[in-house]
Amino acid sequence: MATPSLQDGIDNAGSPIALLWKPGAAPWTPEVVEREYAGWRREQAAWHEGVALLNLSHHMYDLWIEGPDATRLLADHGANNFEKFAVGQAKQYVPVTKDGNIVTDGILAREAENRYLLSGIPAAQHWVQYHAEKGGYDVSFVTDPSSAYRRGGGDPVLFRYQVQGPFAQDLVERAFGGPLPETKFFHSTPVALDGRRFRALRHGMAGQAGFEFIGPWEHAAPVHEAFIEAGEPLGLVQVGALAYTTPNVESGWIPSPVPAIYSDPDLLEYRKHLPLYGIEGQRPLNGSYFSTDIEDYYCSPYELGYGRMISFNHDFLGRDALAKAKDAVRRTKVTLLFDAGDVLDVIGRGRDPGFRLTYARHRVESATGLVGVTMQTASIDPVGTLLSLALVDKEYAEPGTQVRVVWGEHPGSGTDPEADLGFPRVRATVHPVPFNLHARTLYRRNA
Image (cartoon, rainbow, N blue to C red):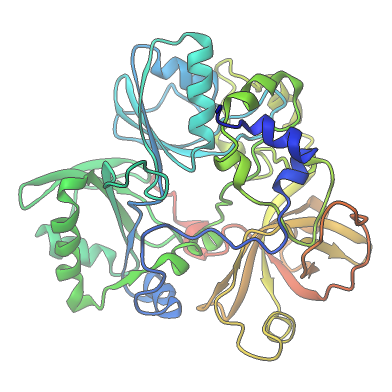
């Protein structure tokens, strides 16, 4: 029996929205890693006040791209600048459709002249590999799915450990016997620990100081133990799956926007190529914002804050559309700070709401109606309330603007998208992106 495709799922459901709309869907959290080690509140505090250790080894989907056409393939289907892409450097890869909407980003690292590693959720990887095969590019691929989808179980190819927080540099110096070489943001440097060689990527998740250490899985356990031992006198806290999902809300990265692939007739072949039981067919939509048109959920890279990454110095799929859209962007990314009292009353029902995480698309309203939509909302204990990353109309993006978030789950098809369903409103104040001051002012100062 043939494996059902994404297009099969759409046809059987009746529409992309009918396939993806799942009210009350449980939010994704990383696989395999413990949900909590010291408690999510203490774990969040660690990267603000001390030092935290995050295990990123299990939830990344890795695609190695190698061959004479590797750079041409990625440049033909990515809006990034490839003229100044050094070996050892990483970029947030921005692939778009011909209409200029994002497919979903990923982290692209250049490992050698003709070898790259694209990591993250697999939507961008699927896009690149499909176009390579369709276009006859001279490249080869090696894949390593996330631990939840690795056939037959087994270990990852790579370990990824992130050391983050004000004491991160102290921990690194204790572990390595001294400071690491000065490294630019999103660049890596080779390191060795007790004879084990791997790489240190200058990176952080909430704007705090930090490194991401990446190396062969055979070294995973001893490297992890070395970090634990070095961090013990500094009060190192391991971060579990719950807290791990939240620092990007402070640093301003919106994970997993809806891939803009569901409606274009020219992408029918691509939808038939994709499996139904993959990220594109299974990542749910829910929340108080509902539309029967999947294109209402598409995002421009400009809306997501990726304008500075777009380079028009080469031809690429979607270039003309992005050039036209540059000066006509309607929405912009903001942080919403939820009113703590409303969170207590509406979300906590008069009690401590505890840990809250949702990727729901909730309506953001002003006195005149809909002005935006949330993309991810999470409890941030050091802030004392919930934060949300949202896309709002530009006239409501000024810091200090007051809006309301409609807290509820629209049932989906069969109910008017604009129906007043009696959902409560949570007051919120617009803040800049990134919300974290360090991330906003100093994060990329040495990029």
